[in-house]
Amino acid sequence: MPSQERLSVIVLAAGKGTRMKSPLPKVLHPVAGRPMLESVVRAAKGAGAEEVRIVVGHGSQLVKTVAENWGVTCCEQKEQLGTADAVKSARLNDLEGDVVIMNGDHPLIEAEDIRAFVAEFRKHKADLAVVTSDLKEPGQFGRIIRHQGQMVAIVEAKDASADTLKIREVNTGIYVVKASVLRNDIERIQNKNSKGEYYLTDIIAISLAHQREVEAIKASPKVAVGVNTQEELARATRKIHLRKIRRLMEEGVVVIDPKSTYVEEAVKIGPGSVLYPGCFLRGRTQIGSFSVIESNVFISDSEIGDSVQIRAGSYLESAKVHSKCSVGPYARLRPETVMHEESQVGNFVELKKVSFGKKSKAGHLTYLGDAEIGENVNIGCGTITCNYAADRKKYKTKIGNNVFVGSDSQFVAPVSVGDHAVIGSGSTITKDVPEHALAVARAKQFVKENYTPKAPAAEAPEKKED
Image: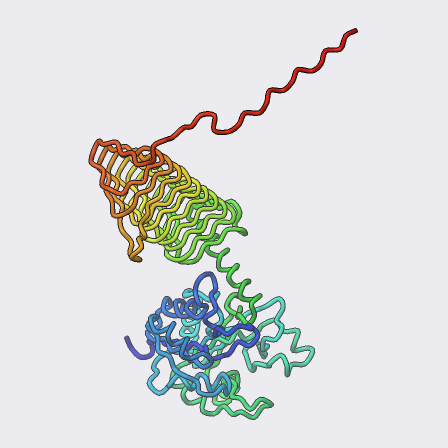
């Protein structure tokens, strides 16, 4: 790719985030399930950035550890000397083509936003551009000053006059600049201000003074949304959830109450599926078509097939549920659990690391762990696989096809039950059961009559004579 078409992104992520009142570096706080810095990096890569450089400072070691798998380069700002100093810390000497500079605490920005900035920048053949937005409440944002439509300056809110504060067009903190211009003009920025810091906003005046082509590119207000407090963090998360919900509804998903439904960005749902209020879907979860997710269901990193019903209050984590299954209400599927087609688990059933066979059922009050359950098996109420032994190891229970397990049965693993076997209610199974066998393992019932004294017969009421 020619150098003039090359795109690099510098993400400023060195700030402490004092107003978050949290020991976690600000940019690592989760927004809709992802560190907000990751959302920015994903947007940059999605826009075609060949290289993303993250400038770290506060909590640099932790930020580097989290970011190292994202395919980025981390550059450390040794001292907090301002935004221009942070950009210089990104080692500008080997940058070529166009450079986007943005903040790591703007999680609402998307790849198409960045592509639009860059396209506009290249269309105008600009040397430098600042991305602006019109805000209803500009607050403490720097104001864009224009003369005959052309931007001439950025005035910080604290330095602005009453008339200037009425301007609604603000600096979002996002810049697009040619690498050569950035290297030259950033060196001219001085720290002659009350804080003794190097402000990146000063590059506008410097570039204009050197007769460079400087543009202001207007964008959606969402790109100006930064996160500085816990309240703003929650607000950004809500916006991303609603954005995801809108897209799902456009694709044919039925969402009964969008404002009380929570779906993270990576989740995929097929058309015709229904989401009830209060459900929370996160991570790499995938749901097929015509499935129903009822209220207060939590699903994380799980795969749900077509025509599945997940009833209210159920919790699924790293599980796989094939088509036409039913789960819950109030069931729990733990990691490495697979429910095969048309199987059912009911209220207060927990499966952990279980292969649950086609058309098998566990109606209620059951724990199955480290088990292989065959097809068309009926698991009675109160059944338990005792998979954790005194030697602190876990063992497997295997139950074949078409097995009937009576209520209140325990399987002490390792143990196997053959096809078509029947387990009598209340049994504790410690030995393998062959095919077509009946296994009953319980104490013999003992009955002692007249064990408790009988109450004396009540006397008949005295008859009164007339």
